[in-house]
Length: 88
Image (tube, rainbow, N blue to C red; front, side):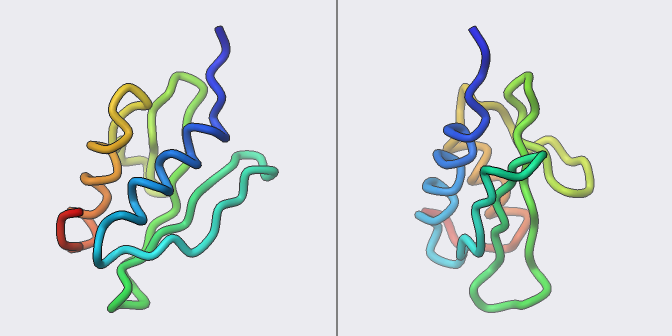
């Protein structure tokens, strides 16, 4: 069964948006690769773009593996930690 990366990124964006200090800036699902752009609400420089690999791994723009589609909530929490955000 093929992974639906668009649905996975939508789920990632939802979980990231639950963190008090994070703001989902954009979700680009029609792009190749599709991505979610997230930033710390209180900093214009603490931001990250996340993609989802065909294998189901969430990857930052600098190649850091946040987690997998098996545990989207934990992957979003790892991004929140990296962007110095408060827990959900």
